Length: 353
Image (cartoon, rainbow, N blue to C red; front, side):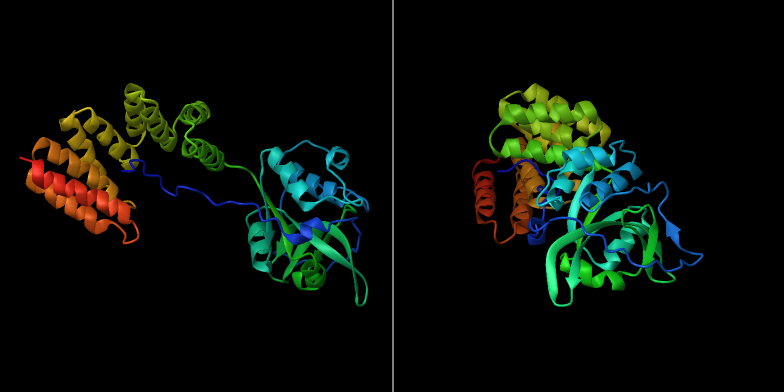
C-alpha cells in the first residue's frame, strides 16, 4: 500500500514554448500617439524609464521590469549577455534570464483582462508586437514594449517603447500587432517563499520517484535548512528515511512536523504506520485515529492504516468496519488498491481474535 499522502502531488508547470518565440528578429519601433490619461489613471511606482534602440528592445524591456523589482543589472549588461538571433532576442532567453535572477517568469498567451489584472496588482507586463511594414505584408520583426499603468476609465494602458516616454494606448489599438505576435506576454513576478519551497519539493519528490532516496533526503534537508518550518518537507524527509531504513530519523521527522502542525494528516498517518510496523500499537492507534479525523483526499489510505492497527490490537469488529469503509472509499479505477484492502479485510476476519 502507498503510505505517502501528498496534497497536489505533482505541479504541472511546464514552459509553453510557443511557435512565435522561434521567429524573433530585430526590434522595430512603431511608437503610437499617446492619449491623455484620466485623473483616476494609475502607474506602477518605481518604474525606470530606459532608452533602448532598434536591436535592444529585449534587453531594454527586461531591464525595465527587473529594475522595478530591485535587480541592479543594467540594460547594457543584458544587451551584451542575452543571445541574439538575427539581431534580436528570443522570448525564451528573456524568460530564462529572469528565472536565473530568481524571478518567476512565464510566457503566456495574453488577453486584455489578464494584462489588466497584472497591472492592477502592481506588476508590469512585457508585450511582444509584430510590426506590419506595409498593407498585406507581414515580416518577422517584433518589438517588445512594457506596460506599466492602467486607466480603467478610458480603457487604456501606459506603455514604454524605449524612448523614455510613457504612452497611454488602448489594447484595441495594439490588437493587430499584438495578435501578430500570438498575443505573447511575459509575466514576471517576485518569487515568494511558497514558490521556492514548492519547486524544491518537486525536485526532491522526483528523486524519490527515481528511487534515489539518499539524494531525496539530502534535498529535503537542504530545503529545511532554508525553510525550517516546512511541514511537507519534514514529512517527506520522514518518508525518505523510512525507505533508507532509518526508522529513528523517520520518526523524528514526523514528530517535528506534528510539532509545527498537530493536524497534518500526512504526518499523522505516516507516523501511525511507522509505529504499527514497530508494533507500538497504542501510539499507532492514537495517531491513526487523529489522521482519520482530518479531512482530505483519498480517505481509504488513512482508514487502511487504522484498520490494520485495530486488527493487530484485536479490535476485530471495528477493524472489519474500518476496512469496509476504506473499500467503499476507493475509486472504481483503483482496482489494485481495492484488492489490497479486500485482502486485508479477509485476513482480519480470518486471524483477528
